[in-house]
Image (cartoon, rainbow, N blue to C red; front, side, top):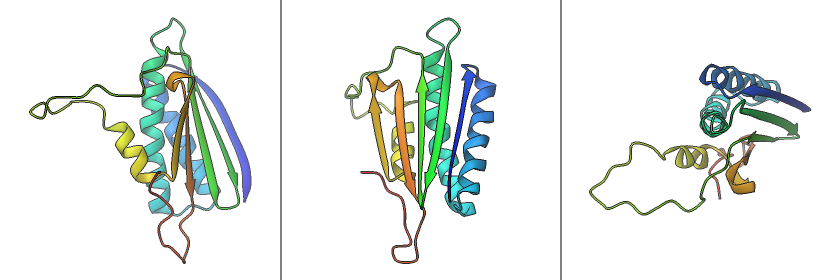
Amino acid sequence: MSGRYSATYRSEPKNVAIARSAVANFARSCGFDGREVSEIELAAGEALSNAAEHGLQRDGGSFTVRCSCQGNELVIEVRDTGRGFQQTAPVQPPDVIPSRGFGMTIMRAFMNTITYSENGTVVRLTRRRDTAEDGNGHGAT
C-alpha cells in the first residue's frame, strides 16, 4: 500500500482532534491494525498538540500534517509556525515531578524513529507495521 495525506490547520485545540483522527484513518488505510492505529494516533496526537500550542505563539499560527505510506512504513511529518523549542530539556531536581514533558516519551514508545529539525518546528515520526517475524514494529531509536 502506498499513499499520501496532507492538510494545514489553524492552531486551535479543536483542530488537534480533527488532525489526529485524520492521521489514524490514514494509518488504517495503509494496513495498520487496530492496536497499531491506536498507538500511532496517541504518538501523533502528542506531536500535533505541541504543534498547535507552539503555533499559537504567532498571530494566525497554523500547523501542517503530512503522511505518507510506502510498503510497511508510515511517515508522519508535523510542521508548525511557532518559534520552536530547545531540544535539551533543563534538569529538574529529583523531588520535582513535572506536569508536562511526557510527550517525547510517549512518541518514542510507539514510533520507530523520531527526528526534529528547524528548532523543533518540524517533527518527523516513522512507524513500521508489526510483522510476524518480530511482532513489534515500534520502539524509537
